[in-house]
Amino acid sequence: MIPFFIYYSMFGLQRTGDLWWRRAIRCARGFLLGGTAGRTTLNGEGLQHEDGHSHLWSAQIRTAFSYDPTFAYELAVIMHDGCAACHAEQEDVYYYLTVMNENYTHPAMPEGAEAGILKGMYLFRQVVRARVRGVQLLGSGTILNEVIAAADLLKKDWGIEADIWSCPSFTAAGT
Image (cartoon, rainbow, N blue to C red; front, side, top):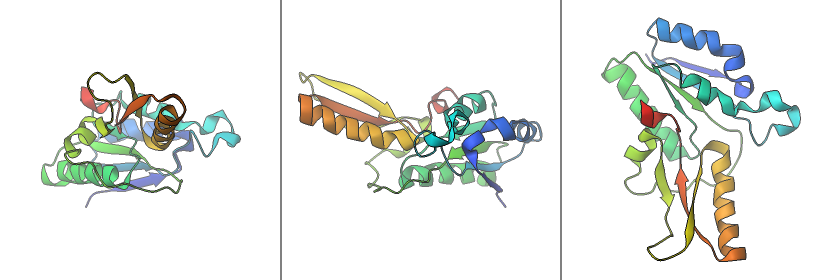
Protein backbone atom coordinates (compact mmCIF):
# COMPACT_ATOMS: atom_id res chain seq x y z
CA MET A 1 0.00 0.00 0.00
CA ILE A 2 1.23 3.47 -0.87
CA PRO A 3 -0.41 6.23 1.19
CA PHE A 4 -1.77 9.44 -0.32
CA PHE A 5 -2.46 12.48 1.86
CA ILE A 6 -4.51 15.01 -0.10
CA TYR A 7 -5.10 18.41 1.43
CA TYR A 8 -6.04 21.95 0.55
CA SER A 9 -2.58 23.38 -0.02
CA MET A 10 -3.37 27.07 0.12
CA PHE A 11 -1.52 27.16 3.42
CA GLY A 12 1.18 24.73 2.32
CA LEU A 13 3.58 23.95 5.11
CA GLN A 14 2.12 26.64 7.35
CA ARG A 15 -0.40 24.13 8.68
CA THR A 16 1.11 20.74 7.84
CA GLY A 17 4.86 21.29 8.30
CA ASP A 18 5.06 19.33 11.54
CA LEU A 19 3.52 16.35 9.78
CA TRP A 20 6.14 16.59 7.03
CA TRP A 21 9.02 16.48 9.49
CA ARG A 22 7.38 13.65 11.39
CA ARG A 23 7.04 11.70 8.13
CA ALA A 24 10.76 12.16 7.48
CA ILE A 25 11.76 11.09 11.00
CA ARG A 26 9.50 8.03 10.85
CA CYS A 27 10.83 7.07 7.39
CA ALA A 28 7.36 7.33 5.90
CA ARG A 29 6.67 6.68 2.24
CA GLY A 30 3.99 7.88 -0.12
CA PHE A 31 2.57 11.07 -1.56
CA LEU A 32 1.43 14.43 -0.22
CA LEU A 33 -0.85 16.14 -2.72
CA GLY A 34 -1.49 19.84 -2.30
CA GLY A 35 -4.97 19.87 -3.79
CA THR A 36 -5.24 23.54 -4.79
CA ALA A 37 -2.02 25.21 -5.83
CA GLY A 38 -2.46 28.94 -5.38
CA ARG A 39 -0.57 31.72 -7.14
CA THR A 40 -3.18 32.39 -9.83
CA THR A 41 -6.77 31.41 -9.11
CA LEU A 42 -6.77 32.20 -5.38
CA ASN A 43 -5.13 35.63 -5.47
CA GLY A 44 -8.31 37.42 -4.41
CA GLU A 45 -8.30 35.53 -1.14
CA GLY A 46 -5.17 37.23 0.20
CA LEU A 47 -1.46 36.59 0.47
CA GLN A 48 -1.85 33.51 2.69
CA HIS A 49 -3.21 31.72 -0.39
CA GLU A 50 0.04 32.15 -2.30
CA ASP A 51 1.42 28.62 -1.93
CA GLY A 52 4.64 29.09 -3.90
CA HIS A 53 6.85 28.91 -0.82
CA SER A 54 6.05 25.35 0.30
CA HIS A 55 8.51 23.96 -2.26
CA LEU A 56 11.29 26.01 -0.69
CA TRP A 57 10.45 24.69 2.75
CA SER A 58 10.12 21.09 1.63
CA ALA A 59 13.55 21.28 -0.02
CA GLN A 60 14.98 21.26 3.52
CA ILE A 61 13.63 17.76 4.15
CA ARG A 62 16.07 15.29 2.61
CA THR A 63 13.50 12.49 2.20
CA ALA A 64 10.94 14.70 0.42
CA PHE A 65 10.89 15.12 -3.35
CA SER A 66 8.84 18.16 -4.32
CA TYR A 67 7.24 18.69 -7.71
CA ASP A 68 4.95 21.32 -9.21
CA PRO A 69 3.75 19.62 -12.43
CA THR A 70 1.73 21.42 -15.07
CA PHE A 71 0.61 18.67 -17.41
CA ALA A 72 -0.94 15.24 -16.86
CA TYR A 73 2.05 13.45 -18.39
CA GLU A 74 4.39 15.16 -15.90
CA LEU A 75 2.21 14.00 -13.04
CA ALA A 76 2.12 10.46 -14.46
CA VAL A 77 5.92 10.26 -14.80
CA ILE A 78 6.47 11.61 -11.28
CA MET A 79 3.89 9.31 -9.69
CA HIS A 80 5.29 6.30 -11.52
CA ASP A 81 8.75 7.14 -10.19
CA GLY A 82 7.36 7.67 -6.69
CA CYS A 83 5.52 4.35 -6.68
CA ALA A 84 8.66 2.57 -7.86
CA ALA A 85 10.81 4.27 -5.22
CA CYS A 86 8.39 3.69 -2.33
CA HIS A 87 7.13 0.23 -3.19
CA ALA A 88 9.48 -1.63 -5.53
CA GLU A 89 12.75 -0.19 -4.21
CA GLN A 90 11.55 0.25 -0.59
CA GLU A 91 13.12 3.71 -0.27
CA ASP A 92 12.11 5.79 2.74
CA VAL A 93 11.08 8.83 0.71
CA TYR A 94 7.89 10.69 -0.03
CA TYR A 95 6.77 12.96 -2.83
CA TYR A 96 5.09 16.33 -2.41
CA LEU A 97 3.06 17.35 -5.46
CA THR A 98 1.12 20.55 -5.94
CA VAL A 99 -1.79 20.04 -8.28
CA MET A 100 -4.14 22.64 -9.69
CA ASN A 101 -7.75 23.63 -9.99
CA GLU A 102 -7.58 25.11 -13.50
CA ASN A 103 -8.98 23.69 -16.73
CA TYR A 104 -6.70 23.81 -19.76
CA THR A 105 -5.51 21.68 -22.65
CA HIS A 106 -2.82 19.12 -21.86
CA PRO A 107 -0.39 18.46 -24.72
CA ALA A 108 1.33 15.21 -25.56
CA MET A 109 4.62 14.58 -23.78
CA PRO A 110 7.68 15.71 -25.76
CA GLU A 111 9.82 12.79 -26.83
CA GLY A 112 12.48 11.89 -24.28
CA ALA A 113 11.14 14.21 -21.56
CA GLU A 114 10.86 11.59 -18.79
CA ALA A 115 14.39 11.95 -17.41
CA GLY A 116 14.19 15.74 -17.46
CA ILE A 117 10.84 15.71 -15.65
CA LEU A 118 12.36 13.70 -12.80
CA LYS A 119 15.51 15.83 -12.73
CA GLY A 120 13.28 18.90 -12.48
CA MET A 121 13.66 20.58 -15.87
CA TYR A 122 13.17 19.73 -19.53
CA LEU A 123 12.79 21.55 -22.83
CA PHE A 124 9.06 21.78 -23.47
CA ARG A 125 9.20 23.78 -26.70
CA GLN A 126 12.31 24.67 -28.66
CA VAL A 127 12.29 27.32 -31.37
CA VAL A 128 15.54 29.22 -30.85
CA ARG A 129 18.22 28.03 -33.24
CA ALA A 130 21.87 28.99 -33.70
CA ARG A 131 22.30 32.57 -34.90
CA VAL A 132 18.74 33.47 -34.01
CA ARG A 133 18.15 35.97 -31.24
CA GLY A 134 15.88 34.58 -28.62
CA VAL A 135 15.20 34.09 -24.96
CA GLN A 136 14.84 31.17 -22.59
CA LEU A 137 11.67 31.13 -20.48
CA LEU A 138 11.02 28.82 -17.53
CA GLY A 139 7.98 28.00 -15.48
CA SER A 140 6.20 25.35 -13.48
CA GLY A 141 2.74 24.51 -12.27
CA THR A 142 0.09 27.14 -12.78
CA ILE A 143 2.58 29.66 -14.15
CA LEU A 144 3.83 27.55 -17.08
CA ASN A 145 0.69 28.25 -19.09
CA GLU A 146 1.37 31.99 -18.61
CA VAL A 147 4.96 31.42 -19.77
CA ILE A 148 3.64 29.74 -22.93
CA ALA A 149 1.32 32.71 -23.54
CA ALA A 150 4.23 35.12 -22.95
CA ALA A 151 6.35 33.28 -25.54
CA ASP A 152 3.53 33.59 -28.06
CA LEU A 153 3.20 37.33 -27.35
CA LEU A 154 6.94 37.88 -27.70
CA LYS A 155 6.86 36.24 -31.11
CA LYS A 156 3.71 38.01 -32.30
CA ASP A 157 4.41 41.54 -30.98
CA TRP A 158 8.21 41.74 -31.10
CA GLY A 159 9.41 38.94 -33.36
CA ILE A 160 11.41 37.44 -30.49
CA GLU A 161 11.68 33.65 -30.38
CA ALA A 162 11.51 31.91 -27.01
CA ASP A 163 12.39 28.39 -25.91
CA ILE A 164 10.14 27.18 -23.11
CA TRP A 165 11.45 25.04 -20.27
CA SER A 166 9.10 23.24 -17.93
CA CYS A 167 10.55 23.01 -14.44
CA PRO A 168 8.38 20.61 -12.46
CA SER A 169 10.93 20.79 -9.63
CA PHE A 170 13.41 23.56 -9.06
CA THR A 171 14.92 21.51 -6.21
CA ALA A 172 15.03 17.95 -7.62
CA ALA A 173 18.33 18.46 -9.44
CA GLY A 174 20.13 18.87 -6.13
CA THR A 175 18.90 15.58 -4.68
